[in-house]
Amino acid sequence: MFNFIITAGVYAQTAVLLQHAGASSPYYGTNGFRDAYTASIHGDTILLPGGFFAPPDNIDKRIAIIGTGHNPDSTAATLGTVITSGIGFGDNADSCLLMGMLIKGNVSISYNAQANYLTLSRLYIEGGISTNGDGNYFAVGCIIRECVIIGSITGYALDRCNIVNNILHGGIYSPKGGMISNNVFLGGDPVGESSRPLNGVRDCIIRNNVFYKSVYDWINCVNNQFQRNIFKNEPAAAGNMYSNNYINVNTITLFVNYSGGPFTYAANFHLDSPNDYPGTDATQVGLYGSSWPWKEGSVPVTPHIQTKSIAEQTSANGTIQVQVKVAAQNQ
Image (cartoon, rainbow, N blue to C red):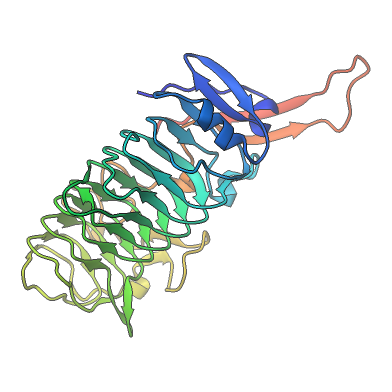
């Protein structure tokens, strides 16, 4: 369990805050994230303000790292949190939380590292997510939710993980025994107008997803259960089980505002006719179904600073007026 507090005013917006045992310590500059991480111990929380930050070389502690978000509309008052390169996790990163930032690179788990129950949430990842190993060590129970992922999820060392409610430009490769649910697959490995959004996936429940492009085939995908997914065409059935899927759907008109191409924040991935596509759990197929529906604005769980106003000059007694509007978050 991670606990965090918010320090009001300008102070919280200019410093990286390390929270430990109810106390906050500030760290400044582009290396503030690295310095706060060095000083942290298991169970601490690091709050990143808006701005650009170099990450630690490797995250190898059980900590929570929370930024201001990545969506321009919801970070107008604070600016978004941008990590200037990829982030890696080591063996001791069990139950880490990474939330609310744009990552200009990959998120990776070290070779053969068992970073179990890692949670990646409400991130914009310009690269992909990668795990690798010799097949004897796995990261168990990880959660990847409500992320925009431009690259692919390469899950050779992912076991029984939940990949849910994400926008995926690339594919998902080689996890086993988990849940792949309520994602929107915009592409995959391109083959003309077709794609391979899944490759080497096995023993997974794959339900309530949208496969926007024509599916070419499933390479080395076996023993998966496909339930109530939306497909542009009918996928190859060999080696997997299918039930109650939506086949031959005109995906060009499926969403309120998206007609192909790269992800933009202007797109609207609400289904145009959600009642036509109930999922396995009585909610709708796609991002806005499941018990973890996509949160508008991708706002993290920390209190959200919606607006701030700072007077241009001090008063006669030397004080300065600062007005901040903050909204609590319940998820």
